[in-house]
Amino acid sequence: MMTLDPAQDRPWWKEPMIWLIAGLPAIAVVASVTSYFIAAHDPDSMVKANYRKEGFAMVAPTTPADQAAAALGLSARLTAGNGQMKLVLRGDLGSHPQRLILNIVHPTRENQDIHILLAHSQELSYIAPAQELGSGKRILVLEPEDRAWRITGQWTAPFSGMAELVAEASKSPTHP
Image 1 (spheres, rainbow, N blue to C red):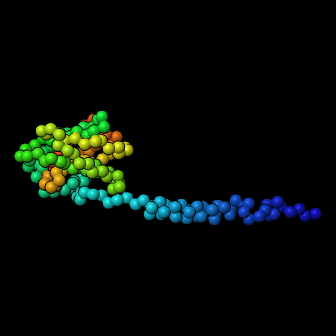
Image 2 (tube, one colour):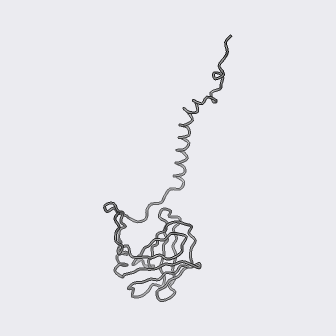
Image 3 (cartoon, rainbow, N blue to C red):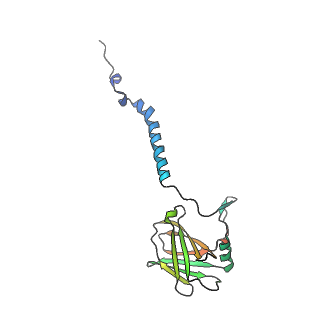
């Protein structure tokens, strides 16, 4: 009497080799299509500064506004606390602007950039309400409304403590 092998009576979807041969490529196709839709939905914005490479170091270019700030010896100290930002400007300015623009730039997401107008409060001080930014590294760019000069710095959000802003032309390039 002849008996049938139970492995031969199984339907195709219960066969492990079919899932190994057809299943892995199908999973790869689904994963690649999913990756494409994620990348296309929320693309990264372009880097804002025109960096150049010197040796192995990436160096930010100096603009006329950076050079003007360096010539004036401008620097600033920015602090945040109690719901407000306070900036103390130092340098050889003949007259102090009534308002300054503080750009808080996210390194990769342009939609998270914030532009704050700082009002002149005392002789060398400027104030503005503090903004909630989430967390992460931010690039600070301070300039007057006429954009005659510009000083920059970095701060890690959530903001607390102090940050120094100086002219890009006065910073020395760092090499590894």
